[in-house]
Length: 149
Length: 149
View 1: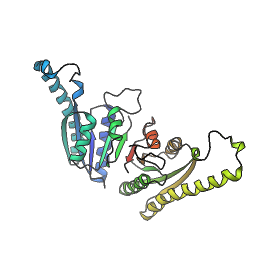
View 2: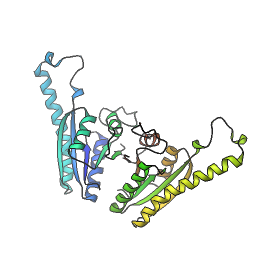
View 3: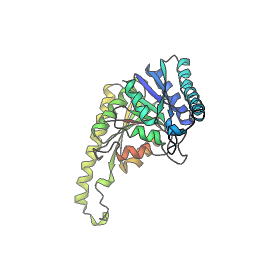
View 4: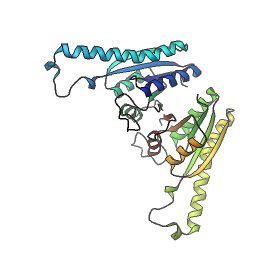
């Protein structure tokens, strides 16, 4: 039934908790894990500045920084999988987190998505972050497990 | 980690699917199942009629009917547990579904809630029914798995 679990992570506390939860469940179910980290385009592409007007020497270091962070977050989960003898892969993509999570879920044919209730950008007062909210509300057949922070 | 799973059911297609999913997972994890069916007070207590103004011979048959249906829904899951050799209990309560689900989750100290994306009263066009929406958005530590219809 649950043979492949997708864990989107942005390195937040809830995402890390979801990662540990997913690894634990994968171990017990002998499932594999896909650790996904999305470089959120919205965080460095200003709405008011056209790409052609932005100096590449400004954009590129930000992209590099975000990519390194994204890789670090996914690697954390991948390492946890390795320690626990669980097959896993790491995927880094760029775009809107909700869309990228859904795309990867389809691409990797996962049977379950496990994610934290709140990402890095979520307001503390919200009971559900916008990315988790977006994924939960997507009209897809894949079950979603929300791990609360 | 996952030792007791709460499955709220209103007999809807998504709830039945969530029930099968929960039983399958419980079997693989050697967890137990709590099948909860809530008699939704809102479905027979009109907002405009005081209880004292409503003849008991009208209210009681409706209550009986709803109770029988609630028991039937929870029994479906309980039977599935028995077939699969899974420890289970059946709980029938009366009240607001979201509140009752959260109360039972605390009372039974469950480690996971598995529920369908849409209940009986959900509009087909909605991507998430109001009860599931309510449970997901509750500020509790218990993870929630949403099984899509």
